Image (tube, rainbow, N blue to C red):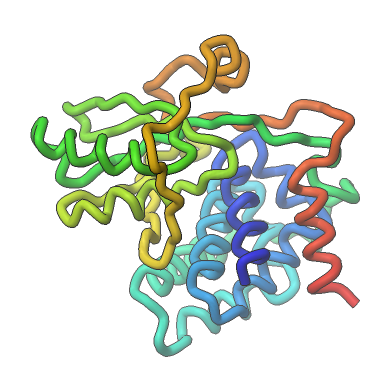
Length: 271
């Protein structure tokens, strides 16, 4: 399931950006792939798939297409009734099912999905920023604990704190998952993290993260920082008040991770 988790995790990261959501839903392979991910037993894959769907549902015009996707509602309903799921997965499954079950004007299945491949020729940025709300960040002692935890994570470039709001904006390599940060912070035993994101209306919401079971690569020494000119070039935005970075695609001749994702989905889920 490592390949599946990597694919759905990357798709979730793209779905966290409002400007990407319509393209994801219109793609021919992404929604069917997410439906199939909902039927796996691995809870990490399930949770990431549900997070992706929750992001996509923030855009109201996506909801009819999502709810009409073959197998979507059945798989979500089955999840809400599956025994043995953790509370986090079960709660998120019920939330997504509830959003997609709300009365909407239905559209034909896969309507307007014209793009044969999602973000073809897109390439990942070398770095991205995420904002975390850290429960327990009440004093300089807790801040020190959080700093130590983040410095140990391989792939962390820099971070800044907003103590008044209990937030930390972290600059990380594009291939580092947000769950890795949450897992490192949870290891302090006194702090926990949720991701701060913005919905379609521009309102900030807290997204639950699942740190348990996430393997965190640790630094043996302090992490290398990106050169200032590279950092500036790759920076998706300068406003740290903004909840999430924009790892927007830039056109490039080389293939991107999404090409591998499409290949993975086709190879494993289509016949």
